[in-house]
Length: 176
Image (cartoon, rainbow, N blue to C red):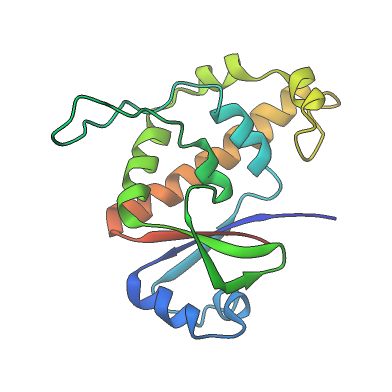
């Protein structure tokens, strides 16, 4: 089975239009939903999450009125974890998750600040194979899997999220 991570940039109006469309994915792929753009990162999602979970998390955000500061990894957002489930937006492998515009800004900023050398240092093909990270190409094609697959797919997603952040859009994450 081939599972593809798909991302959709949407504003509030486009999101509402999608929620009211039975075949929302078909409408998107055929360009019928204005103010929505779609990309996918092929099967790189799990590999990117694995890598990003091993690099520095974003700086802690100050909490108004309190001394406690929470610092967390945003890596799970790549797979939609941490977003809000959108049960009306069914995809082949479960409902889409919605990431609000404010979180898109924070996420995009963090991704833009990650040095590719930090990813290279975190990359451990055997550990990824041992962790059964999909699509299990890490040991067979170690250099190419990172340099020609994961890093370019992450750069593509980073550019996409940066454009969404600049436009004040949210992002839908689903698996097709």
